[in-house]
Length: 170
Image 1 (cartoon, one colour):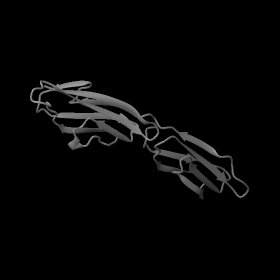
Image 2: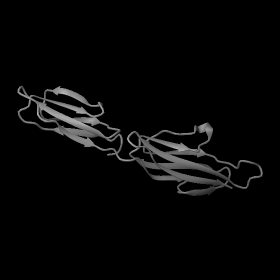
Image 3: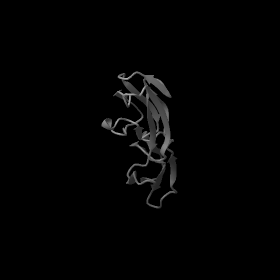
């Protein structure tokens, strides 16, 4: 699944009085529930997690039954400057808009932004930054190049994907 997606755990049992469900990360712990068939919803794992259920009756506990949920690598499916991938050419004074789409990300970083806008932005799967106005760097410069690098991160994989776009100002 993608990091942060919802997971639903379902179970059924026979001749049980209670069921306990736990996770390998400790984020889910439901000891001795008084229902033998059921589900747990609204679980949002961020790393690979094994969930284990144990049914119990007065005589004994059953062998644990487990399922593992795996988290996908963060990937960037698109990163553009003014709708163009790789390199866009603008004239000084024109605005630049950065757009992105990513999967299985918990956070996105954009390196190369003006210090006034912060060096990085943290957000989730899709977004945009508007109002950027890159300019020539010196009075004798005929062009200036700005490089923006988008990096996708999740807790399971860390930084696993990055894409760069270049804006050339004339």
